[in-house]
Amino acid sequence: MKRILITGAAGFIGSHLCDRYVKEGYHVIGMDNLITGNIKNIEHLFPLKNFEYYHHDVSKFVHVPGQLDYILHFASPASPIDYLKMPIQTLKVGSLGTHNLLGLAKSKNARILIASTSEVYGDPLVHPQKEDYWGNVNPIGPRGVYDEAKRFQEAITMAYHTFHGLETRIVRIFNTYGPRMRVEDGRVLPAFFSQAIRGEGLTVFGEGNQTRSFCYVDDLVEGIYRLLLSDYSGPVNIGNPSEITIMQFADEILKLVQNPKAHIIYNPLPVDDPKQRRPDITLAQNLLGWEPKVQREEGLIKTYAYFKEVVTV
Image (cartoon, rainbow, N blue to C red; front, side):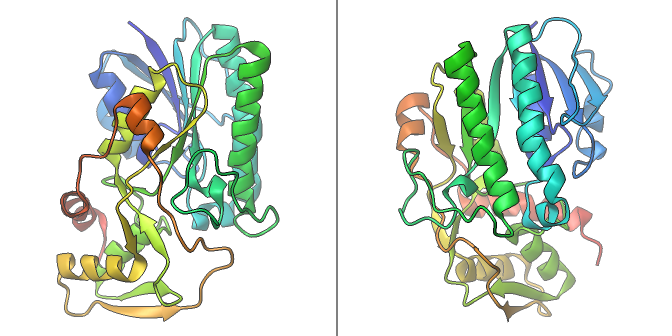
């Protein structure tokens, strides 16, 4: 049985990855310090023989006994509200944490996949964003602690690949959504759903003309699964190229939730908020035979069912 370590295992994406690899017959070792993760996301796996959980901060030395075939590094605060509250931890998990896990992968002769992000492109001057675009990032702005942590993470991963010959994979994740997102996550989809369900104002920044591209979590997990088993070491965009303005997205949420008290309110644009976000997924299509399957309408219905259960009115 192949053994895989998944860091950030109790987080939104990490927990779905745990589900997938358990289902595929791997022995899954989930690791999380619960700084933003929720143990409830993986509690259903605890009775299983092929799942174990380590409560640990990967910014400190990481030891996993026995054979290890794969590592998925998904530990990190991942929303603006988190990395603005925890800037130092965000930088440390992207730098020290990644270094520790690359060292573990080297000692175990394991293949490692690290979770990068579309934020490495910053506020892009190229649209849509391809993997060969270097980005437009403000390193000392409020988002810099996350953006630069991820850019460093990619750099040290490639250094281990070229210098040590380590088998490495890099996924650049674009906006992902689905069940198990945190209500107080701070990103647009949890904010809109919780505000609409409570009958509050949906907070649109600026005039709502900025665009995002939303990928359902099952599609993302499938892309990551294929990328890990591929033989490509460079970064690969995984996201849904269906682009929508924030204002259009707010309208879709209002129509779905149908709370007559819900409405739209406008706030000033945050500093360095990206104006456009859409992945070019040509590489993923050609390399992995992957493209998203879940249409936004279907994905939002599934996600709404989850938020109705967890949002307190």
